[in-house]
Every structure is written in C-alpha cells, then in structure tokens.
Length: 425
Image 1 (tube, rainbow, N blue to C red):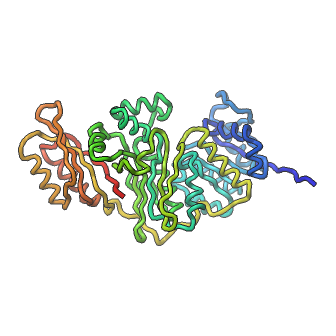
Image 2 (image 1 turned 135 degrees about the vertical axis):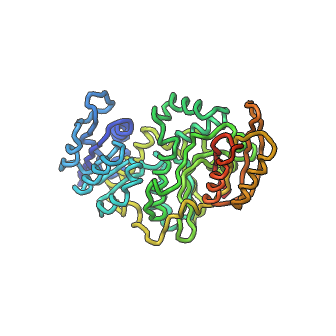
C-alpha cells in the first residue's frame, strides 16, 4: 500500500531576487526537498508590483496581495516585500487567517516581532532568512542552544559594511572608494544607508536578542552607529596596535541587564571573528554550558536567503510548531541604559599643532576620570595641524560623551572628534 504525497501550497508576496530563487530551488531540488519535508512544496501564486517585468520563473502572478491571503488553497504565505508598515499588515492578515508565515523581513520584525508572536499563537512563523541569510543562527539560538543561558554574542551581521572595511584595511582605500567598489559589484545598493549606518545590523541584533534573552527592545532604544566616518588614520592606528575594525552587533548579559549595541569596533586580529572578511557574516555565541560557538557563512544574496526561506517551509511541512521567539517577553530582563555601557575607546582628534594643546586635552580627560592607554601623534600636510590618536582605559559611555562634548568646546580642536569602541573580551 502506498501513501499519497500531499502538497504544501505556497504564495509568495514579492517575487524579486529572493522570491525567484525560492521558486527555482524548489523546482531544481524538488526530490531532495520532498524527501526531507515529506510533502511536495508547491508555489501556487506570486504577487508583484510590476507584472510586466521579466522574471525567470513560471508561476501565476498577481498584483493583489489579497489574492494570496484570501485564497483557501494557500497554506503558507512567504513575505519578501520588504518595508515595515505594509509588511506588518500583510503578516497580521496572514496569521489572522490561520495561514503559516515565512518572512525575511528583519526591519518589520525589529519593530513587530512580539505582536506577531501574540497574534500567531500556535500558527507557525518562520524567519530564519531575516538574519544572516544562509547561516542557520535562528535555529541555533532557538533550538540547538536552548539548554544554555546565553552570556553574550557578537556578530558581523552586515556583509556590505564588512566588504567595505575589508577593502579599506587590505587595499588602503578610503571609505568612499571602497563604497563605490561595493556598489559596482552589486554588494551595496544605490542608497546604501541602512548597510553603512548600522541600521540593518541593528534590526538583526534585536531579533537575536529576543531569541537569546526574551527582551523586547526597539531600534531607537539601543546604541547604533555606522562606518561612514572611519578614515585611513583609524585603520593605521588599529594595525599599529594589533586590531581589525569590524561593524559588530554586540549583546552582553550581566545579572538581569542586557546591553545591546551596534557600532564599529576595534577587535584583536587573533580573534576568530576578526578574520571574517569580504561580504561574509559571522556570529560568536557564548553559552553557559557549551562555551563559545561560531557561525560563519554568506549573509545575503538570492540563493543564500532563499535557502533559509525553504528551511522554514520544510519545518512547517514537518508539522513542527513552537513559540515564534522560543519564549515570551521576559519581565526579569532589563535593557542596560546606553550611558551605563562600559568600554575602552579609541579617539581621533585634529588639533592646532602648538604647545599647551595636549595639556588641555589631558585636563578634560582627567576631569571625566578617563585615562589614556596608547597614544600616537601624526603631522599632516595642512600647516600647523596635527592628528592625535589615542585609546583609553575602560570607562563609561556617559564619561566619554561628556569628555567629547568638552573637547568640542576647545578652540584648538579643529574638527569633530571621532571615537571607535575597543572590544577586548
């Protein structure tokens, strides 16, 4: 007696690069996917903005989202449209109609993940593709490391910014030259804002923090800075003292407080995460039982992201359903105020090259209980101008920001002071 193989019927909202890859992989790897899922995964319909645009897939297309949400034959809605508000409405409608949801939308989840969890109840939501494309970090935190308290994590969560920094470090390029190269190669969009200002990495860190700690923070609640002001001087200082510069998303737990931050970071070159180059992503997770684990792989691109989407579809086909984020909001966990975060800092100053300036700077640092660890001074082509590059011992965000504000008031400081945090752990 043979059992008839059933179908899991899928509707895709947004048949762009990722959507096309989902359709193609489901077709080209049909047999192995069916063997793993136990059912046929069938894309019944897609929704697009422009039905006249050529697409490399052969599925029925519509311009009306309701054609998928209200179709009783569709079992799972795959949301690949991007954006926040409209995507959230689509996700809500999908779950309210008891259809499973798979999304790659980190921006929408950064704001609305807990609302969706409450609406969903037992209806499955898959979002592996929302963080680091082809790296199964969501499943690692939700399932593989579920016996552990997560003590901390740090990750290169954006491949575009990592490519730019790699170019700056390896080829001595300035930021704008490296960005242009990334755009020419298709690694950066025409408007690269979210990649370079830390916003994209911030969205992803918030999703990971919910899985690790049950904390419902929003982008505006956490420290987020980008890479757009990094100079070749900063790269030179980092090299001199054995650091690489990476845009890192960092989470740390101490007692019942979690600190969450995204910013350029100087990290020792011998750390594994410092060795991740180009457009690749990497995440280090420290569990109280397993110790440190490292996850590495392609963070973006049509096929890597589609691979993650399909992994969620297979989970749904197998009938696996659990609370979306692994557990509910934790009332015992608080977000550490930004001002209380502790770090070492690198600071770059352009100053008048005259006597007394160093004494002024030292006085301000002393007033804010900040001490210098390492120091470099460079003459520059502009007459009577010098660059001062130094790092501090551990201090607080509150103290360093006060010191920067005081330094900016000095007539001898010729441009905006710039800082990069140093991660020694």
